[in-house]
Length: 536
Image (cartoon, rainbow, N blue to C red; front, side, top):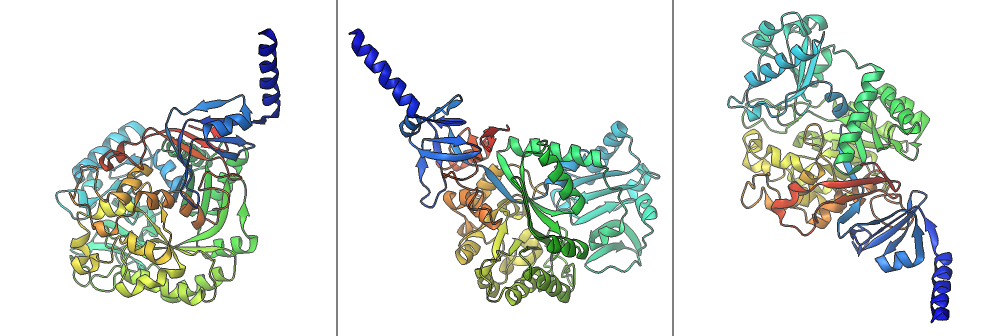
């Protein structure tokens, strides 16, 4: 008997000697690999920050050994979630400003400003988040009450979509702007011959708001990272960054203070175009710079989106392109001659027409430039086919946020081509999904819900909003992982749980692929990993 026990011990020892040592093993999980077959697995092994094996628990534990093994106890695991369009840096800075999200009236906005200033006592108050569409009186606010409450302290507060700014007289005086200041690509709203304090799109640039210092920027980036990790995000596509911010992100990543991966869309000023095209693509383990963010028009909520026909609820108003059509051609020509990607914000049907036609001209004969339309919100029927060589980068929660008032803006007929995510998917074959936070909430599970269920969190409307354009859960998860990675030229390194790819993954408290649709918004990230290291 002793000889038998001894022999078994030798066999176990020999088997363990043959096992490959790795850094982390995860077993007994419900893993959606999002590989080409959308296959499932139970376990994987990680070494040097990459997946080296994916399979059943018995296969992995037989071949590999690790000092750290996680028994997932049946929890769902998906590839690290990617937000294909957000404002990561801006969201971080917002944590240091007054939040006006969720306000139900202009008076509530004023109350928050007073309470904020009492606490902070700033020399210039900034904030974001008001939305007149959520108020009983659905009209732009005016500055009179601000002037009374804050006669000497400049105030500049952005609408939730970032495309309208409300300021008081102190901010106007500081900026030396008048109602007669010429504006191209925006509007200074005047009522009864007087400035209302509302500036739309390009007009907002006239207001001189103090830039954050380096410490405020660092604090903002770290705060944004903590929030993103808590929702299971491992990569963020920041839509519109300047050189100094990109270099700050890089330095923080090199010092390992910033661990999140950032796909940076560079703000397409002429200075930035010249600098980055000359410099070429920048690629590190965590930072990827190879695209430009261009603004085609404004937003629908502030009636800045450029429309072919007049707004249904404001006659003789069409919104506006931010630049002239010729300027878009100049930018497209310069970018097309480089390895960089052109990612253009286009919401109105007129903006989409101009940008798509410009893309077609400069993408002729080029099939892998992966230029993107950000939002692709309202498309004329004849323009859908122009997405054959253009990636739709869309934000599903915009549909369920806007559905209460969008038809009032553009009418029933144009709504047929609005928020048409399935139609866009059918043309290109892929869609990249994001949130546009802080315009919408950071929460990617609300993205998943809006995409796959097309309702608000109260279950409205009963049959789903424009349900013909719902995406399946599989399509939705792909849009938040492998297709988002593809839109960043990163599909060979992330976006799925496969051998050789970066070990980014997210553990969830419930299976978003199978649970009742109404439960999807309650999904939580229980753990977030980057390079096999737990970051949340």
